[in-house]
Every structure is written in C-alpha cells, then in structure tokens.
Figure (cartoon, rainbow, N blue to C red):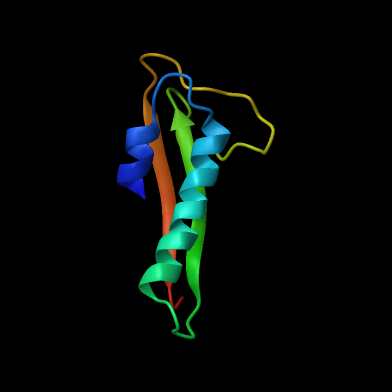
Length: 84
C-alpha cells in the first residue's frame, strides 16, 4: 500500500483521493491474503497524508480540495491489523 501511494504522490493529486485509495487498498489486500479465514482484518489506523509542516495524522474529510504541489514533502501513515 505504501509503495502504491508513494507512486501516486504527484503534483495535482488530491490528498483526500490518496487517503481513500490507501484505505481501499488495505481492505482489498487483506481480503485477498486472508480470504476465507474467519478473522478480523483491515484498517487499524486510517491512511493519513501529512503535507510539509503538518507533523502527522492529517486525514482529510471527504470533499476537501487540497492537492499536492510541486516540492511538497508528504508523510504517509497507516495501520493494518490481522486478527487484532
């Protein structure tokens, strides 16, 4: 998920779309790897993209229009749990 998001962090990319894609990829990946097993799995911490001077844990609300600009520093945080 991190590798995919890293590749999508380009000028003009909407932060809310990147965060949603991260959450979707977590759910998709967990369901493929642990399919058919009756265990809890998925998002433990939502995908957060903190830009420049934002220290951490920025998770945009749906409808926010913030986009990446040339030269932005992007920090990506996310968490996954498998069986708690």
